[in-house]
Image (cartoon, rainbow, N blue to C red):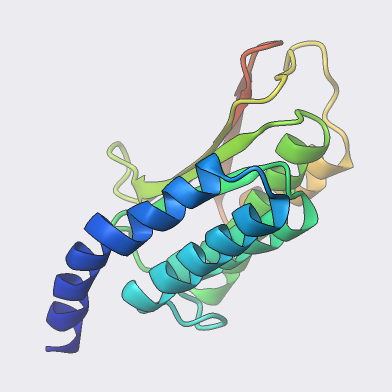
Length: 184
């Protein structure tokens, strides 16, 4: 019953309050007002989606990672979308995915100077496991000529391979970058 009520309220708020906050964020010339609107939007979404931080809930943990990234890198906005049918994960895979995504967000802001990053989690159609994409609109890089540094090799690839997953980096100079993670 609580989930149904929350869904009904979410629909109503999405059409009004959330869109108004998003408009304020886009149109305001004040960094402080944009940040406040974004924080309020994030808090309201956290309530509407029932996210409990520290619960091992992948959606909640990814939203927290996005909030931290936006706090540390205010010029980079992060959008998180997690579908309802994402497979349930244990604590170790959630920790690995969130750690890898956090590193990818840092790379997008710090090295790619991305104004926006989209984190998307869904069921991997091929394996039935988890698919996560972290896609930015930054400067990009050429994966064939850029050696994987500690962040890419250990913080991303190492974490994911430790829990049995695969990682793929897709990028081109001037075209942004995408990290793809698959956990079977």
